[in-house]
Amino acid sequence: MAKSTVLREKDAADQEEMEGLIQEIAKESLHLKLDQRIVLLGRTGSGKSSTGNTIIGNFEFKHGISSKSVTRSCQRHVTTVEDKVISVIDTPGLYDTSMSEEELKKEIEKCIYMSAPGPHVFLLVIRLGVRFTEEEKKTVKWIQENFGKEASHHTIILFTHADYLKGISLDKYISESNDLKALIDECSGRFHSFNNEDMINRSQVTELLQKIDKMVKINGGQHYTNDIFKKAQRKIEQEALKQKLMDYGQTALTAIGGVAVAGVAAVVGIALAKGK
Image 1 (cartoon, rainbow, N blue to C red):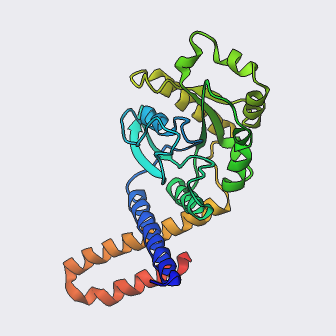
Image 2: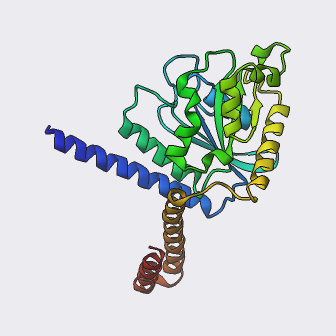
Image 3: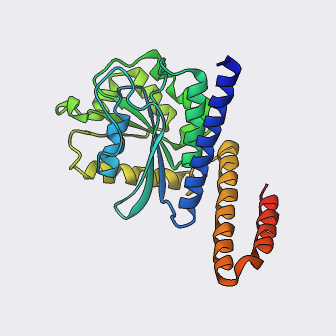
């Protein structure tokens, strides 16, 4: 098979997957209002997936102890935590060398649609007790380059493996690293810690959700957004309108028969044209 044909087939498959994702999110938006949208970011092995499981209180995200990323594509789970309807989005590891730039770009696009009209928080997950690398020093810049320059104002550093501290305060641990202090300063001093081995300890989740609420208030009570998130949201809203009108059309057809077909089709066409 010619290389160009393979590429065309891959592009078509990617497009079909994205359209399916938009349809799924649009359908959900018709009957569900989210209180918080949380995006997990971090290096492979930092504990992103385990953090997602701790937040939702269940083993929904694949996780493992390995230098190889378990999460190869964005995963999303919606649930209710402490009377809040939240979505948690897990992402592939930052700087994952096993992924091409094209693959990473595709996953970032999926993340944007999954968290549209914009996340309430980016949780930058860092593992305690391991060497802080040059790449991790640049993670805030990476977030800004991929999600927008103001994204750091909506970012909280989340340290995992809090049991590593063994009685040492997290503040003291941070104070001993100029690199960590600089990273936290870029996120306006916001940080938290999890022990993902102690999932039953819900107080760590309660405190995190409170910190997210506090940050959102500081940011004017709004989630993060920019042009790319707004563009994604417009597509989702357009698809939701299409589904709503189609549902209306099916109801009308059932009630009065095939006479309604032309009228419904015209309404759908006009509404979608206005939504462009």
